[in-house]
Image 1 (cartoon, rainbow over the protein chains, first blue to last red):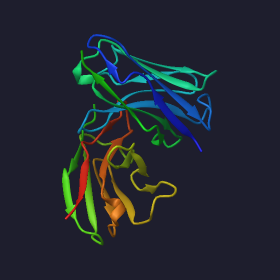
Image 2 (cartoon, rainbow over the protein chains, first blue to last red):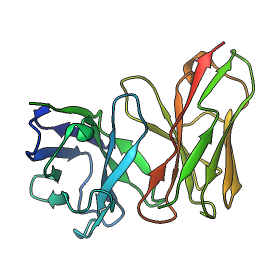
Image 3 (cartoon, rainbow over the protein chains, first blue to last red):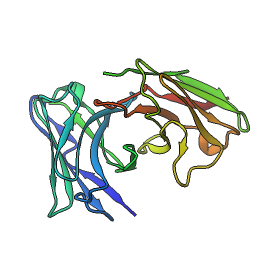
Image 4 (cartoon, rainbow over the protein chains, first blue to last red):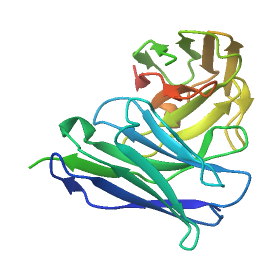
Length: 119
Length: 107
């Protein structure tokens, strides 16, 4: 059974960098069948796809965030990371990592982590 | 970007009812549409992919249909566990986009 667990600071100051890690268990992030993604949800609002990374390390970002976001993979620790620079209050959200399967949909999700941007 | 619009935003219904939620895409996405269920404080759960294919383990009372720009999610007989928020998502092209969500509440 695949499990994903997000971790990182719950509070980030404006203009600083948000950094989150997703630890994957029960499956390898370098498996050729899967991509991995980050999705966020501001309080009381809908879901926004941030970006995805393939098993080979290719990345795909939402153009609305592309200038500020980096997604990377650490195969030795089986982790996916998210960095979002120059954050503002608009980046306050629950951040989810998820597995993208062969049908290109998100079939396994972490429980999510709330990140608040505030001084 | 492809815009996804769900209707209604809120739907009131009773246990046993048949309900339908609609999702419209701003351009054709063929059948590259998924539906997710989300309960408060929880991550979304995949229900339907490729517009009408039921994810393993999802009850058969859930069904999806449509292609092109108009899609529906139908729950044939509402159960107490089904009261939640439902999201559609297109994966025809990057950036993947979601609808704003439909909250299904008890009438």
